[in-house]
Image 1 (cartoon, helix red, strand yellow):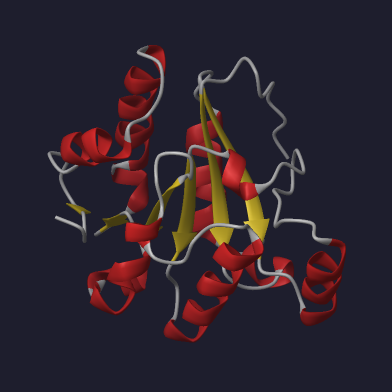
Image 2: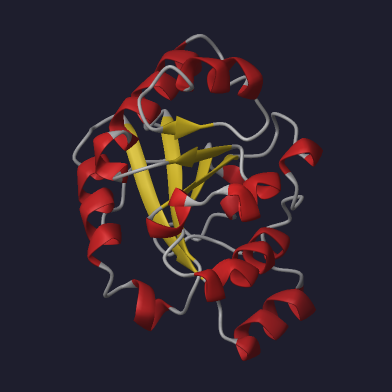
Length: 182
């Protein structure tokens, strides 16, 4: 696990695997992206997973939002929440994880106070079934574009904050980026 200082790291992303910890931790793509991002001093990536039904029940009962593995921060506190789209059967877990995180499901219902929701992975080649729920979808290999996206975000953070619409307009210029709202 990589533990970075939250206050000293300007751009923060949580990688969400929409399945159990035991399934997600064995995924090579997660390990690659986690290493790439955390090798950059001004970027931070933490991880979260879909809880099993007993843990989900406890989170809801105690009103504890879905949080990251490393710092236990609520996922809605990050700049980006990135989901891997590995298989269609996990799509309902994505919606459940957004709900557990206190994040509106549909992109049009989220303002700048929520993280930018990113999707990527094998099922991103047909993004339309999930288009209403994502702000940005990466078509192709994430390791090719993730650092470009997060470094673009760093520019916005230096200027104050990330304004989603402006950020998405700039991100659209990167190769392999699909913005459903556009």
